[in-house]
Image (cartoon, rainbow, N blue to C red; front, top):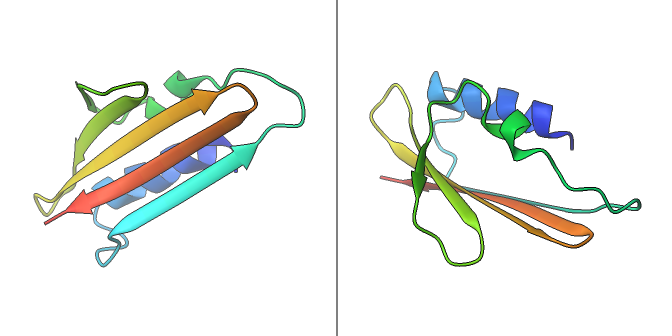
Length: 87
């Protein structure tokens, strides 16, 4: 899944779509080892960077006041994006 599509998904979540979503995990195995441009994922999200060990974490708030956390990790040819929603 392209990072641009994930960016659109997160923007829609901020506007209130998918209110019952609790967790989303996306993992990809790149055939050609390229470094993902995480700026594409975060563009226009107004995310706050949080402390993390070995990965990057960002906090989002949606229109209902619910916070979500994006955790991104890139290890060689593997990349993962995990999205947690807290009540």
